[in-house]
Amino acid sequence: MRLFAAVLPPASAADELADEVQKLKSLPGAGRLRWTGREGWHFTLAFYGEVAEELLPELHERLARAARRNAPYELRISGGGRFSDRVLWAGAEGDRAVMQKLADSAAAGARRAGVPMAEHRAYHPHLTLARNRTDDLDIAPFVGALDGFVGTPWTVGELALVRSHPPVDGIAGKQPRYETVAAWPLGR
Image (cartoon, rainbow, N blue to C red; front, side, top):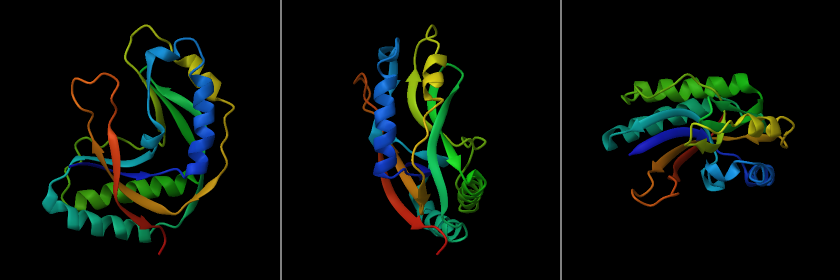
């Protein structure tokens, strides 16, 4: 199964971001972007890719240990950015050093559990808002519109293991579906 470790924003933070995304969708060119659904909003800590079923017990144990070793921390959704002109994202503000440590622990725990981490990338906290499938749309105006966005802080209290169900082939506009398969409280 396709898995990743994540921080999931609470409903109140998602509500604030949803209001901001509605404003972004009124900008010229917004209809040419493929917007992520609110139910898919998350901060990926470590991407695992396909994980064999027999590795799950050890992965769960390692992630539970990583969660216990990392204290709850404050986070808020703030600002935004882009990866080239392909991905528009909202940023994270708060105790990013603790978030980085949690991401490192989630990646290390998976490696120790035997999960191949070939698809793992350097950590950059972000929440994907939209993907650009064209070569002629500059998403800088969308990034600029996010500059002033600062959400209300919340306390991150758990580490989630999330399964990604790919969209059904041949159905335009379908997005992956995400399912939280396990979660562990931080710092306990």
